[in-house]
Image (cartoon, rainbow over all chains, first blue to last red; front, side, top):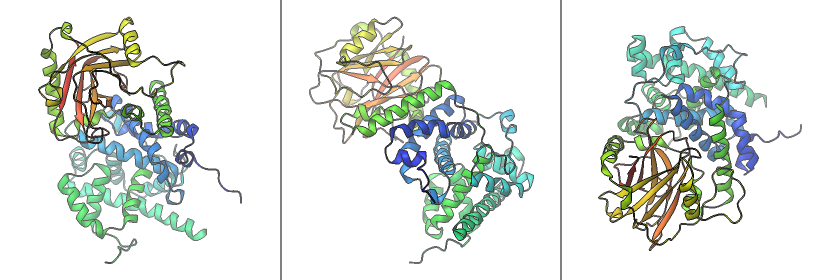
Length: 187
Length: 288
């Protein structure tokens, strides 16, 4: 079996200049999609996107394809940066309007725009959650609302929000973990 | 010491803390608590939870393309990054050219927020006339690597020449700079030339104290009147050599500055700051 060609991230790690620009084409939509939802203003989202790409270029050497897909790696870097920015401005009200919050549509397995194994697994895990659990995950993970803000918004006890968030993420983790074992066992 | 079993399920309280860390960040007290509990949590469990959160982000990701202006800035940033990779930071400005603007650093603590807000108020009434600016003989910083593709120039004009050319350009503005009461700024005079059209500019100083780049560096900030005043745009870092006389420093705004309302220079640790405990503003200038 011929060796896989190196990914954009791996090429950046080896110092290939063209890969740095290609990275923007490859992951720009993904980063922008996450940044828009986790930023308070469009200008913030643009600034954050620039910061995220710099983080990506600098962290490319840490990408390990055996630990997950490149898209999850990118999403993790993006989320870290965006959460950090949100935390620093936590005294400000969230930017997202109700319209924006309501615009999110969970993709069904097989139809997620970001095609990766993890996206498929996560979509399947989300389907097993109750609607109110999914809503908590959506507000927390996609819109960056704090657990307290989610509790207020949904009129839910904080403990319930924490419980939903915990069970939801554990469910997703289980789906990812199960498939990871399947891969390693099948290899 | 035993190694945590990666298959073991940690207590709910530990997971909740970790999830809060992943989804919204922790307070210092919560972070200390997590650090204490860290040994009870396998690293793979932590990574898996964060991976799960990232995977959920993928499920709802859209395919909307980058705004053209943002794409262009990213491409310029990519070129700067590549230039830096091939050139070790012989001059701090050169290495800085690849850095992304970090407006949020200004807001990293409440002290900074207050300082920034006060700064703008102070700037408005601080300065009187540009005529007081006096410039002494020139001693330049090392030339900097371009941060964006520019027309080939051989030989490259000096920073002083570039500044002079920009000053004659229609639409450019000149703003006097004045010193604060900071010891590093005693007797400093200078000015800013800024061209909104090309988003380029230069600061010129005389009398700014020399710095040891290993100990501290100067950092430029641009206050954009169209943006939240708590988030000035990072304009780059620079050093002042001993007995420099006049120095001219290019301003590198990584994000578009729509309304350049004021400029400031602060003293920061090498490489700039992420979180600064208090404002250390040495130079200020505001558009009248």
